[in-house]
Image (cartoon, rainbow, N blue to C red; front, top):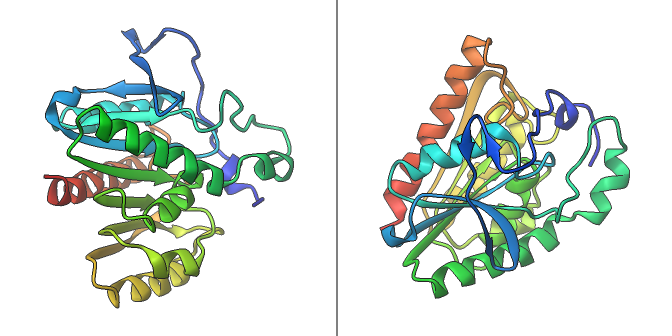
Length: 239
Protein backbone atom coordinates (compact mmCIF):
# COMPACT_ATOMS: atom_id res chain seq x y z
CA UNK A 1 0.00 0.00 0.00
CA UNK A 2 1.67 3.22 -1.11
CA UNK A 3 0.84 6.58 -2.55
CA UNK A 4 0.44 10.19 -1.50
CA UNK A 5 -3.21 10.34 -0.42
CA UNK A 6 -2.69 8.39 2.82
CA UNK A 7 0.18 10.69 3.72
CA UNK A 8 -1.47 14.03 2.92
CA UNK A 9 -2.84 16.28 5.68
CA UNK A 10 -1.38 14.30 8.59
CA UNK A 11 -3.03 15.11 11.92
CA UNK A 12 -1.22 17.14 14.54
CA UNK A 13 -0.71 14.51 17.20
CA UNK A 14 -0.73 15.73 20.79
CA UNK A 15 0.60 12.90 22.95
CA UNK A 16 0.07 12.88 26.68
CA UNK A 17 -2.77 13.26 29.13
CA UNK A 18 -4.88 15.91 27.44
CA UNK A 19 -6.13 17.16 24.10
CA UNK A 20 -7.94 20.43 23.55
CA UNK A 21 -8.06 21.03 27.29
CA UNK A 22 -9.91 17.82 28.16
CA UNK A 23 -8.49 14.90 30.07
CA UNK A 24 -8.29 11.80 27.93
CA UNK A 25 -9.80 8.52 29.05
CA UNK A 26 -7.30 5.71 28.52
CA UNK A 27 -8.09 2.09 29.31
CA UNK A 28 -6.79 -1.31 28.26
CA UNK A 29 -9.44 -3.14 26.23
CA UNK A 30 -8.70 -6.54 24.74
CA UNK A 31 -5.03 -6.05 25.62
CA UNK A 32 -4.79 -2.78 23.66
CA UNK A 33 -4.29 0.69 25.08
CA UNK A 34 -7.46 2.52 24.07
CA UNK A 35 -9.02 5.96 24.17
CA UNK A 36 -12.57 5.58 25.46
CA UNK A 37 -15.62 7.82 25.56
CA UNK A 38 -19.06 7.33 27.04
CA UNK A 39 -20.25 4.65 29.43
CA UNK A 40 -20.40 0.89 29.01
CA UNK A 41 -23.59 1.06 31.05
CA UNK A 42 -25.32 1.79 27.74
CA UNK A 43 -24.56 -1.83 26.73
CA UNK A 44 -23.92 -0.63 23.17
CA UNK A 45 -20.27 -0.35 22.15
CA UNK A 46 -18.54 0.95 19.04
CA UNK A 47 -14.92 0.40 18.07
CA UNK A 48 -13.31 3.09 15.93
CA UNK A 49 -10.26 1.87 14.02
CA UNK A 50 -7.81 4.56 12.97
CA UNK A 51 -6.10 5.19 9.68
CA UNK A 52 -2.32 4.83 9.50
CA UNK A 53 -1.81 7.93 11.63
CA UNK A 54 -3.03 6.14 14.71
CA UNK A 55 -5.38 6.44 17.64
CA UNK A 56 -4.07 9.74 19.02
CA UNK A 57 -5.33 11.83 16.08
CA UNK A 58 -7.41 14.67 17.59
CA UNK A 59 -10.21 14.56 15.00
CA UNK A 60 -10.60 10.81 15.49
CA UNK A 61 -11.07 11.38 19.20
CA UNK A 62 -13.55 14.17 18.45
CA UNK A 63 -15.53 11.67 16.38
CA UNK A 64 -15.38 9.22 19.29
CA UNK A 65 -16.75 11.88 21.65
CA UNK A 66 -19.51 12.73 19.15
CA UNK A 67 -20.58 9.09 18.82
CA UNK A 68 -20.44 8.64 22.60
CA UNK A 69 -22.74 11.64 23.07
CA UNK A 70 -25.39 9.66 21.17
CA UNK A 71 -25.39 7.04 23.92
CA UNK A 72 -22.67 4.61 22.86
CA UNK A 73 -19.53 3.44 24.64
CA UNK A 74 -16.74 4.16 22.17
CA UNK A 75 -13.32 2.53 22.11
CA UNK A 76 -10.42 3.72 19.95
CA UNK A 77 -7.64 1.14 20.37
CA UNK A 78 -3.98 1.57 19.54
CA UNK A 79 -3.72 -1.15 16.90
CA UNK A 80 -0.19 -0.01 16.05
CA UNK A 81 1.22 -0.54 19.55
CA UNK A 82 2.78 2.91 19.71
CA UNK A 83 4.12 2.74 16.16
CA UNK A 84 1.77 4.69 13.85
CA UNK A 85 2.95 5.88 10.48
CA UNK A 86 5.13 8.97 10.82
CA UNK A 87 5.09 11.53 7.98
CA UNK A 88 8.14 11.63 5.73
CA UNK A 89 8.94 7.97 6.38
CA UNK A 90 8.43 5.09 3.98
CA UNK A 91 4.84 3.86 3.93
CA UNK A 92 5.91 0.81 1.93
CA UNK A 93 8.35 -0.09 4.73
CA UNK A 94 5.84 0.58 7.53
CA UNK A 95 2.85 -1.27 6.09
CA UNK A 96 4.19 -4.87 6.05
CA UNK A 97 4.62 -4.69 9.82
CA UNK A 98 1.08 -3.42 10.34
CA UNK A 99 -1.18 -5.67 8.33
CA UNK A 100 -4.99 -5.43 8.56
CA UNK A 101 -5.05 -9.20 9.13
CA UNK A 102 -3.28 -8.64 12.46
CA UNK A 103 -5.57 -5.67 13.11
CA UNK A 104 -8.55 -7.97 12.66
CA UNK A 105 -7.15 -10.47 15.17
CA UNK A 106 -6.66 -7.67 17.69
CA UNK A 107 -10.13 -6.25 16.99
CA UNK A 108 -11.71 -9.63 17.68
CA UNK A 109 -10.07 -9.61 21.11
CA UNK A 110 -11.44 -6.13 21.74
CA UNK A 111 -14.94 -7.27 20.75
CA UNK A 112 -14.71 -10.31 23.03
CA UNK A 113 -13.52 -8.17 25.94
CA UNK A 114 -16.33 -5.65 25.45
CA UNK A 115 -18.92 -8.43 25.46
CA UNK A 116 -17.35 -9.95 28.57
CA UNK A 117 -17.63 -6.53 30.20
CA UNK A 118 -21.35 -6.41 29.45
CA UNK A 119 -21.79 -5.00 25.96
CA UNK A 120 -24.89 -6.53 24.37
CA UNK A 121 -24.03 -5.25 20.88
CA UNK A 122 -20.80 -4.04 19.27
CA UNK A 123 -20.27 -2.13 16.06
CA UNK A 124 -17.03 -1.23 14.33
CA UNK A 125 -16.07 1.62 12.02
CA UNK A 126 -12.74 1.96 10.27
CA UNK A 127 -10.98 4.70 8.36
CA UNK A 128 -8.59 3.81 5.49
CA UNK A 129 -6.37 1.12 7.11
CA UNK A 130 -9.12 0.72 9.66
CA UNK A 131 -11.66 0.22 6.89
CA UNK A 132 -9.62 -2.68 5.54
CA UNK A 133 -9.48 -4.13 9.03
CA UNK A 134 -13.25 -3.75 9.54
CA UNK A 135 -13.92 -5.49 6.22
CA UNK A 136 -12.11 -8.52 7.62
CA UNK A 137 -13.69 -8.25 11.07
CA UNK A 138 -17.16 -8.25 9.51
CA UNK A 139 -16.53 -11.69 7.99
CA UNK A 140 -16.51 -13.28 11.45
CA UNK A 141 -20.03 -12.25 12.45
CA UNK A 142 -18.94 -11.27 15.96
CA UNK A 143 -20.07 -7.65 15.63
CA UNK A 144 -23.58 -6.42 14.92
CA UNK A 145 -22.79 -3.72 12.32
CA UNK A 146 -19.86 -2.30 10.35
CA UNK A 147 -19.03 1.00 8.69
CA UNK A 148 -16.10 1.29 6.27
CA UNK A 149 -14.94 4.83 5.48
CA UNK A 150 -12.67 5.63 2.49
CA UNK A 151 -10.89 2.29 2.83
CA UNK A 152 -7.56 1.19 1.50
CA UNK A 153 -7.76 -1.56 -1.14
CA UNK A 154 -10.48 -4.03 -0.20
CA UNK A 155 -10.45 -7.75 -0.93
CA UNK A 156 -13.52 -8.89 -2.85
CA UNK A 157 -13.07 -12.25 -1.13
CA UNK A 158 -13.61 -10.48 2.21
CA UNK A 159 -16.66 -8.64 0.88
CA UNK A 160 -18.22 -11.93 -0.27
CA UNK A 161 -17.80 -13.29 3.27
CA UNK A 162 -19.22 -10.31 5.19
CA UNK A 163 -21.89 -11.50 7.65
CA UNK A 164 -23.19 -8.27 9.21
CA UNK A 165 -24.98 -5.11 8.00
CA UNK A 166 -22.27 -2.99 6.39
CA UNK A 167 -22.12 0.60 5.15
CA UNK A 168 -19.34 1.84 2.89
CA UNK A 169 -18.71 5.57 2.63
CA UNK A 170 -16.38 6.49 -0.22
CA UNK A 171 -14.74 9.56 -1.72
CA UNK A 172 -15.22 10.81 -5.25
CA UNK A 173 -11.43 10.92 -5.65
CA UNK A 174 -9.62 7.97 -4.11
CA UNK A 175 -6.68 6.10 -5.59
CA UNK A 176 -7.11 3.19 -3.16
CA UNK A 177 -10.85 2.65 -3.47
CA UNK A 178 -12.11 4.59 -6.49
CA UNK A 179 -15.88 5.03 -6.91
CA UNK A 180 -16.13 2.35 -9.60
CA UNK A 181 -14.61 -0.20 -7.22
CA UNK A 182 -16.83 0.93 -4.34
CA UNK A 183 -19.88 0.54 -6.58
CA UNK A 184 -18.78 -2.96 -7.58
CA UNK A 185 -18.36 -3.87 -3.93
CA UNK A 186 -21.83 -2.45 -3.32
CA UNK A 187 -23.22 -4.80 -5.95
CA UNK A 188 -21.61 -7.75 -4.19
CA UNK A 189 -23.07 -6.66 -0.87
CA UNK A 190 -26.54 -6.04 -2.31
CA UNK A 191 -26.70 -9.68 -3.41
CA UNK A 192 -26.09 -10.88 0.15
CA UNK A 193 -28.78 -11.58 2.76
CA UNK A 194 -27.49 -8.79 5.04
CA UNK A 195 -28.37 -5.12 4.71
CA UNK A 196 -25.85 -2.76 3.08
CA UNK A 197 -25.47 0.88 2.18
CA UNK A 198 -22.96 2.49 -0.20
CA UNK A 199 -22.49 6.22 -0.68
CA UNK A 200 -19.96 8.28 -2.63
CA UNK A 201 -19.42 11.83 -1.40
CA UNK A 202 -18.72 14.41 -4.12
CA UNK A 203 -15.73 16.73 -4.18
CA UNK A 204 -13.71 14.96 -1.48
CA UNK A 205 -10.59 12.80 -1.46
CA UNK A 206 -9.31 9.81 0.46
CA UNK A 207 -9.14 10.45 4.20
CA UNK A 208 -11.60 13.34 4.24
CA UNK A 209 -13.77 12.16 7.15
CA UNK A 210 -10.97 12.18 9.70
CA UNK A 211 -8.29 14.49 8.24
CA UNK A 212 -10.29 17.38 6.84
CA UNK A 213 -9.14 21.00 6.95
CA UNK A 214 -11.34 23.13 9.18
CA UNK A 215 -11.31 26.02 6.72
CA UNK A 216 -12.61 23.92 3.80
CA UNK A 217 -16.36 24.38 4.14
CA UNK A 218 -17.36 21.78 1.55
CA UNK A 219 -15.12 19.05 2.96
CA UNK A 220 -16.14 19.82 6.53
CA UNK A 221 -19.81 19.62 5.51
CA UNK A 222 -19.22 16.26 3.80
CA UNK A 223 -17.27 14.97 6.82
CA UNK A 224 -20.12 15.91 9.15
CA UNK A 225 -22.58 14.22 6.78
CA UNK A 226 -20.50 11.06 6.78
CA UNK A 227 -20.27 11.06 10.57
CA UNK A 228 -24.07 11.40 10.72
CA UNK A 229 -24.53 8.56 8.22
CA UNK A 230 -22.19 6.38 10.27
CA UNK A 231 -24.06 7.17 13.46
CA UNK A 232 -27.44 6.48 11.82
CA UNK A 233 -26.21 3.06 10.71
CA UNK A 234 -25.18 2.15 14.22
CA UNK A 235 -28.42 3.48 15.69
CA UNK A 236 -30.29 1.22 13.27
CA UNK A 237 -28.42 -1.99 14.09
CA UNK A 238 -27.10 -1.69 17.64
CA UNK A 239 -30.04 -2.34 19.91
